Length: 238
Image (tube, helix red, strand yellow):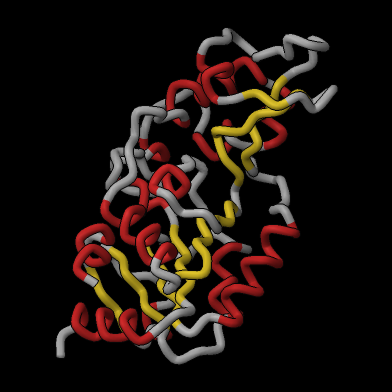
């Protein structure tokens, strides 16, 4: 039996699947990946992207931060791909319990997924640092320089986890809970190199760990089922 057939059979027999995904899930919707060869890390800016997307840079050079952020982080025309749609379908069928994602684009929700744990926040949510009023992504796109609150004039910050900032512990503990109880854990489109998110794999106690990626990861040896290729293509066949 080939890998896709095995995955298909496991999915058919399960009603407790958890999916954990990274940038590779979004690249198939045309959203650039940070670490790929043509990703953001290899483009020329005055500062490397990991510096620009840090908490200290956001504080010291907010204008520069927003220039890069509007230019590179907001892909509002992107549409959910086959992977997003299949996961939403499984949730609807009662097979999938949760999606844990490192992505900040909101595409899982756009595809119809309800239980989405966003480890790194979302570009679709923004808030005033002074009065905490909420602003959508369009407000950021149509503002100039550092966006200001139309109520109190405070600076608006995207609800995304920047470098040097901690993850939301409530989201993390929910992810740990889902993963530790999962029958099947499917991990896709992530290099499993960014901690603490990559450490979530350690909480899985089952014997159906599925890794789907275009390239190898440090965790490949731990997989019960390893499939290399496009996550959208693979999930759509399962």
